[in-house]
Length: 109
Image (cartoon, rainbow, N blue to C red; front, top):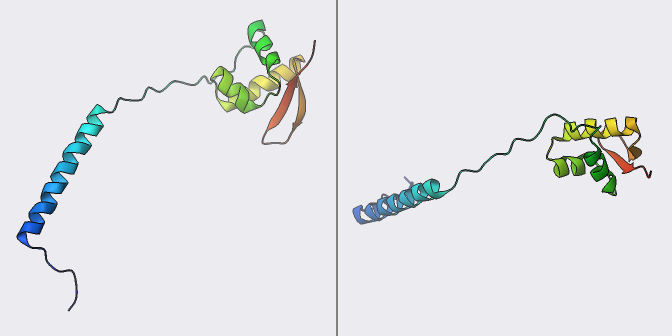
């Protein structure tokens, strides 16, 4: 009884032409798009004994795993381990935190 009305020949030709033009432009865009370079993020935490890194960390006001990870281009898990090692060495002090996030501050010399 009901249903969609069948298109005429001229209408079907117009739709087909539009699809062809859209396909060509999509192909050009895909070819023209430069491939994104992926930087590998370090999995191993930085060396705690490196004085340059420790001094750079001490310059930061608040130390969170995210801040350290973005600063040194390492993963969050590696940043957490790095901060825990710094706390054990006495370079930073735990201010607040729970099992999800910990907030540290540098210890004044």
